[in-house]
Length: 382
Image (cartoon, helix red, strand yellow):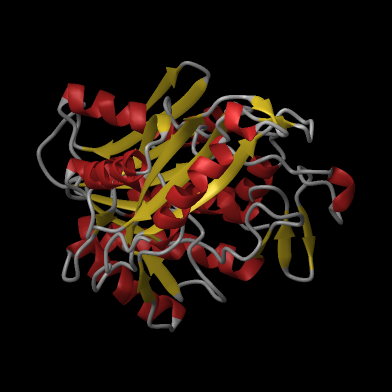
């Protein structure tokens, strides 16, 4: 097997379901130490993070810093009996490597490691610095102790990042056909609407929070939050969960809970979305409690940026395709790096099977990926 295929299989075989790392970062750290990288293991709470750099000696040095960003944790496999082969036993069938994390994103992590090893051997005195930042807390619900926490450490130590390549699976049908040059922000809320519990036969003695909330929900769902812009679609509002009731059909519930989410563009600000939402709820006279959670602000690497143009050119030359430059999809850990002033671009394998049963990656595209990552290094730092 090729080096990248061998390392990907080794990583897949480790059951690193969030926030467990199962030794993935230790393995990678040992390889990069042998390659001459300075390696730090940063553990916060139950989360392992790895920060490896190569270049000018010292923790913080002048010159450009190019960082590759990824995660070793994976989502649960679901019922293992539903898989054609065990999810944590890497298996090759019909030119594809199967296993949990093959596409999201142990294949990309392995490709980054191999590319960096090859790059520093070929260019031991390269300009600037190159780094690899990995976490075991990307797939979790809070992401408190992963890259978000590492960025706090960077700010405290004066570290800065100029360019960041995220290995998230971005492609639609073939490697290089889509790269992400930004992401929408994500703002979530846990809404409680308080009513008065009572008997359904005596509604005058109760206050049904479901009935009270319905007109406000209709207004929230119909609201045009913004028109988007040339880089982003209009902001989206969704209710992901709605719960009320005691389980009895003759009891008016005393409380309703709803989970809401905004995926928003640079045409809106999170503070404005909060304010407008609360104004609608209060206009309907509701007795509410609303707890907000900002997962990440939107970010965009503008056209003409050095990293964006470099990755586009590499896709054209090495993949033979002119990539779509998208801001779609969910969120990624790039949302924590972009506020540092870094250009952020995401490029990785086809995402058709991520989080699914029988997750897989095409072996030929996996073996092509290190060349793409190495080319980014060479064009920016060699």
